[in-house]
Image (cartoon, rainbow, N blue to C red; front, top):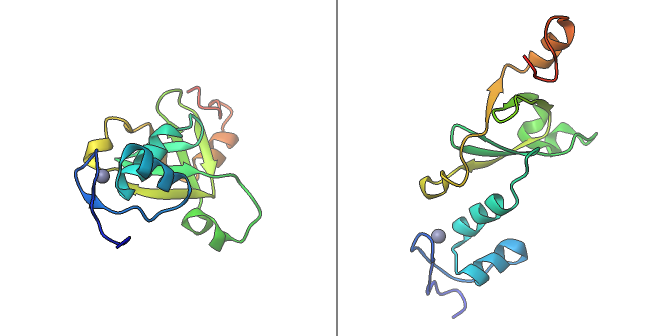
Length: 137
Ligand SMILES: [Zn+2]
């Protein structure tokens, strides 16, 4: 019985059942959302000026730099250099997680806020005496 998909998502109209725990599960119940919509609502509600990145309609989160093995980090510990559009901040990270492509219905709430720069950008900026490495070009 409990596996029946007999709820209708208030956002996208998909059928779903309640089978999730945690914050996403709570949100699904409260707002009558399918898993996918609740997942994106959570990202919208928890948007962070310093950590939430949207590039080309794809959502990423910058997680803390740590000494964990690369295989435990986002993108296998690959280095990314990201520039925020709002204030030109340039951030280097080796722990970037990809949440996926933002569904069309959530694009307005999660507009592009950054661009990806070549990964060597920071070291180039640091070497240059003519450029402010904090992004005030
Ligand atoms: Zn939905």
